[in-house]
Image 1 (spheres, rainbow, N blue to C red):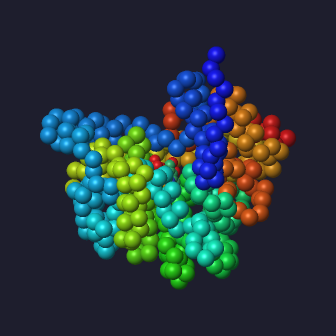
Image 2: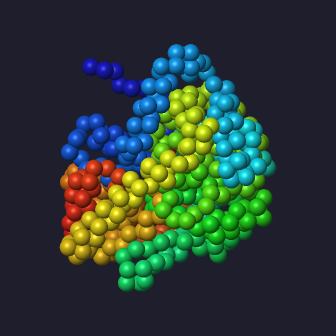
Image 3: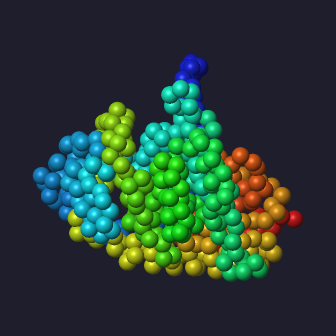
Length: 431
Ligand SMILES: Cc1ncc(COP(=O)(O)O)c(C=O)c1O
């Protein structure tokens, strides 16, 4: 018999960070499904698909790395400096400067253990508690926003989020909607005077929305006029992996912080995040890495180094990933229409402009989507309930209990059958 575990007292910060959270429960369900339950239809989680053409390149490059005895030993046996591998950072700065004309150098780049760590560092540097009793918050100009941010603040009430406007690009009778930024709400939030930074993912996880160039330019101008940074999370976006299906352009300005990642290119296992930011921010992130992790993993940077030096990394999205995901998205949208129409569900989906999610709106649902999630799990369909993505809103909004995020990038049979089961359960929950 094992002894009862002692009741340790956690610090306030530790208590807040280590409290069981939505993301932990969902990651647990997903991990269990992937390892223990081969029959679960995995429409949850943010895993990229295995894109055969890209994985072939990764294998080829891995073989090359292993065959290069001294390079391989250097990669495995040496710590990189906390900022990242200098050759990788220089190559990336050169690429971005020569391709987009961005005025950045080595001093504007840092590597982190995935984009997730980058956001933990950035948010807690720019918001929280400051001298003389001041507090600052992170402003999310458009909710719903990425669930992974929700638990990251070291202080309570860390985020302020704005409800979006809803447009119907195919007309009011259509089944496709799009969120756009309500700038009056953003300006109202900025007028509070306690905003430390504006942050948005582009494309947005969970909706697949892509903020337009005009929206980003206006956010950037607002951030500049308030003397705060605009953080753009390009995990699915530009310059890479380029999972964007609208004519949006990459954006940078001296007060803009860009976060990139190798994950959605197909390499989440390497845990490689990249921050592009003003020098003082990079210095702070480098210091945080040294304290928290000493250095970052070397593998991701070494794997893609030749693609960064040659510029090929910018072509992988348009040439290999986009056609793959566009085909998946179109097929899944067809199955959705088929299943939901047949089941008589009152539904709409967000325009798919980027990433690999369908964001489903089940109007007038009688139960919260957390409960729908549980019902679907018993029918072996794993999704992500929408409630988790609306953190930071000051008032409740019925819409936040009516949405589901669906990852359509896995096996066709699982997606098609999954959508059929969701339609059945939704019809039951709407009656
Ligand atoms: C919008 C967004 N940002 C950041 C991340 C973090 O990704 P990673 O830590 O793998 O780079 C994710 C992961 O799903 C994401 O969807």
